Length: 242
View 1: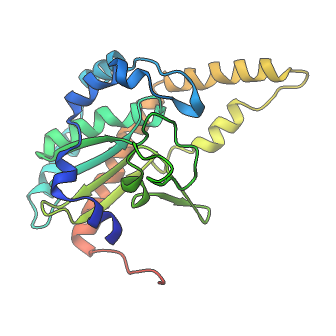
View 2 (view 1 turned 60 degrees about the horizontal axis):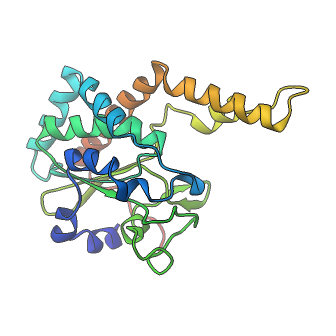
């Protein structure tokens, strides 16, 4: 956490993109020329993201909660997001994060995780990816199963003086993504690997287009609000072993 605070200076935070600027940038030739997931070609998601943002709405309770939190001494004032639009998790959460920031009067800045190349390293560094934001990612890694991963999206909530309050990573706890995807992509008896892959891709995309994509986006907001409330009421968690 201390390493993150030393990297996220006021100047560095201000250099990130606003949500509107990020939407425009995703459709530019510069962005589309970069590698996507696992080196694939990038798709222009800017129109999809804009429509998703226009449809995104907080509940009255969520809007009231973020306003309450932002009004507290030492409450959230800034949100730093690491994202890549090829990620379905980023596409799901970015519009709602933008609405959350708007409702609370929080300053939102979005940073691309990768440079020209897709990050294949589990623990990427600037030495390996000099045109990326690997140094930001290093302080906001997703620790699970005893290992750290450069998962996205990351939404880091800070006080006005850039003290880290909470870090949301990848997807909400109620979305058991690994289990769902493993089931959707599991081979059927007698199925060729090619047929399995094609059917699994269709099933996964159908899930992303289902109402549950919005359910998980709303759950992410609820999880963030609850965590921020707990941080303000209880204080930071106890420090782990050195």
